[in-house]
Length: 335
Ligand SMILES: *Cc1c(COP(=O)(O)O)cnc(C)c1O
Image (cartoon, rainbow, N blue to C red):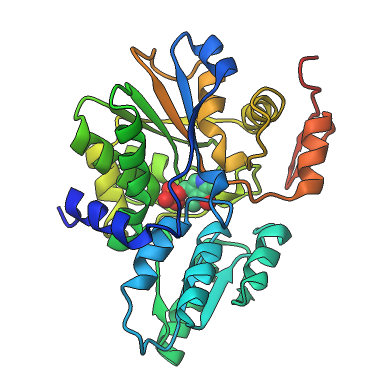
């Protein structure tokens, strides 16, 4: 395997004091629902509002001091992590994103001093611009999920969860390109091979889920979703994250836009936490009864909080929202 526990232990040293160890707290409401203890790993508390700082920091710190700068494609949070890490090192950062990325995420990246390129309506188009910048300007590309240092950085979450609760039976991981799931599964299973790690994603454009089912990376259509952070393909030339997810994940589960909205409401009204759609899919799957029965404590990763607050207000108030060709009928919490 190209990646081992020692890479993740090394990443923990690199990110120490920057991408902070986050709280891992019980959810009394979810615990009552599940009949087993449910704990939330609050990566929404990171300085950039998402876990992606861990992997980005680990990758950027490894670059030589005379690197001409960095570039990446991103659904928003990786770009923010790279921008933050590059600024700390005084490096130029150019972040390539599709027009599907919410404005709140674009603004957050610009505020960190990075240059932003909006290219087309898919991750693939953003990726093309990224490759062009590498060829034309010598910038170093940092993949959001298919990079050993990025995966090792994300894996530090698994170390923290298992250190706090070695008795975890199941870990729920929001799944897109699979860097987070690969790192967390590798780390957690190094501590306890019996822990089950389940990847969860939205049912519209589930790239890793469909690729695992097909046995090779496949392309997906990208459509607007409440889980915008989980959009995009895994790359037909995927080198690391696909093989690692295939080797270490115990299953994948899909959730609908309604189920994501319901979980965002639960997190807000019961746990009093503001979280983006892509970060609550673990709770969504649990609430929808789509998971295998837990035999012990369950840990779910609340991956980020970077969402459009006007949209959040509408969802919490129970108003209708439009996602591309889908109108998500509003529902008041508890009604
Ligand atoms: C990137 C991201 C994920 C998924 O991570 P992958 O490594 O791409 O699978 C989940 N949640 C949020 C909030 C993200 O930004």
